[in-house]
Length: 112
Length: 114
Image (tube, rainbow over all chains, first blue to last red; front, side, top):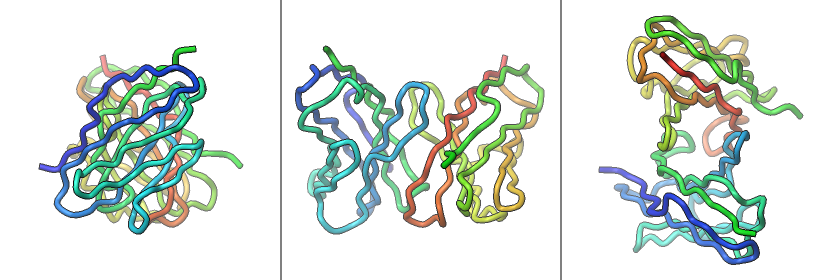
């Protein structure tokens, strides 16, 4: 069955520390891959996406993600988090930009 | 410019009543999408519009759900005879032409069915 797993429901990191959010998927072919962020009171915002080509993708707000086909993973990273990064992060995969299977989300908490 | 707007932001209704949720996409965006987000879940696709046509409505969960788009702009999602399991946040998004375009999401309408 097709699925997306974000194994961490919550992650707490100190401001200035590095961050990695995990995303693993089960899908028949190489899908389109997305990371979205949802901040309190705000709509979902696209952080980055992978369709093809270079497997290291740069996004907005200093985020990057690496597609690893052999591991069926698309982990999100940031070298130094800011308090404003506190939000919920969603990984999504699918054959198009809207026919997506979504992970359940990872809530990022920033310690001052 | 203005982003995607949705109204109302909150809607509380009684089981069995009909509700209408509205989405105003970004001006000039031809593609419009509706999603549902239940508590602790990722998004569930409902329907995709290209202009006023809906080439993909495969995500509508039952015939109680319908949507229309007029003038290539505003869209309305209607849920008839609401049930408690319809309680969720309904999100609308738009993109310039569809395909691989970035979707821009509205703030959502939180629907509570008592």
